[in-house]
Length: 301
Image 1 (cartoon, one colour):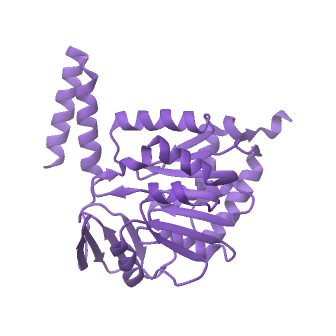
Image 2 (cartoon, rainbow, N blue to C red):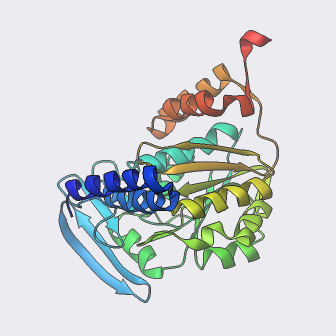
């Protein structure tokens, strides 16, 4: 299907709404259009193709990158061949915004290993950090070790388990939980279960943060998730949209830390230099959009 088709569909839906006031028509077409344009035509050579009980796993290689995909159309993760520890997809960079609010990060849990981009960057950037990564597909772990250079270190514990089951039974407490649960169809439904959100909150340290990556989700499901998060975390939430269209949500176990804008930007600059990602951009974006939730205006002091 080409772009003209979708423009025509959207135009007809708008006209129909003007006549019938039927919002559901627009919602349906909006979702289809968003999913269509979020699909990326992966350029490169398929260097690995395997299938487990959950479906296919592909690895593509271009002149500069390796790409992990579960359907051959959508990037699940990517690695630059000349920077194997870098974070190169915008949404993974944006998820690191949680680090702005943690004074000292010692323990992290990552739900959904993917190609290991977040794991590798965090291990490389913070020598004292310990990470627990949960991945329910052992084949993904094997692919990540072979093609994406996942390090063998005692600072990384990998659990082959369902995220819901793991977080329900673990006694491990984290400063940050990164939840990035996706399959070939979009966001994993388990990520919006009330019991999962509750168990994630329980598994955070006192000042911990749950970070959720929301993408390719039906509008109604997003509304349900917003309501669940607001209830479970008592509205202690920050969110912003990354350039990729992913919505990044920070859910705080306790009160959102109060911070001055200058201090926020100083922390962002330090993280930016340490991790080689544009943290100053995300700090400014958070401040402009929701600084009233956590910020102190120095001019008002």
